[in-house]
Length: 57
Image (cartoon, rainbow, N blue to C red; front, side, top):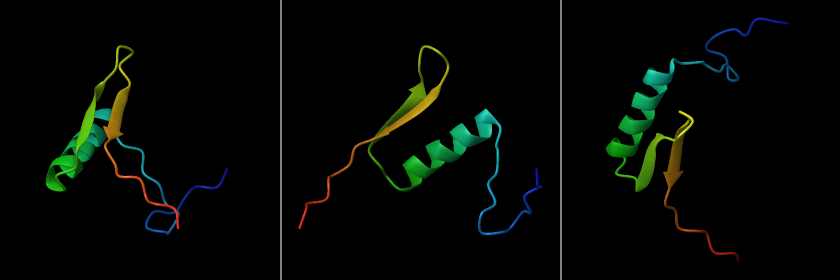
């Protein structure tokens, strides 16, 4: 397996759960997005966004 080089267009990070949860919470609050988030009964962090559907042309 090839090692992915950081800072390339296809580079992906893997974060600690606590850091990712904080990033998501900060993003939601900073952008004033209507969303619910938290851990479910199995400890999985879930995010649900309220959105307006785009109208078909």
